[in-house]
Image 1: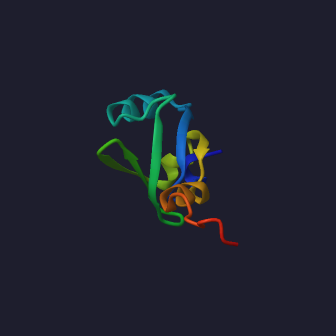
Image 2: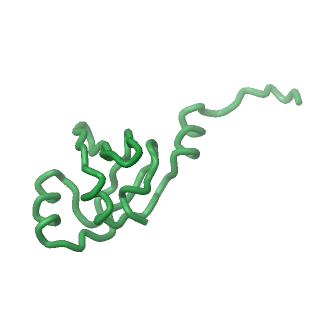
Length: 92
């Protein structure tokens, strides 16, 4: 999957930075193969905002389409984790 296809809230792992020039620039921003990063925002056909620890980085759509990633946690399961355990008290 390409970075440009992820959704806000997805936690991803960078699996490939095919272009050596892009790789050199991305390493300076803490984006490298094996890095686990969260997509905090995505604008359709626009930039992808990545959160790497306390730093947010905007990656343009064209550059994001060249970076290969793997989803570790998708945005739907991330929302469920924030809710925490349900309190049912045994009633149904």
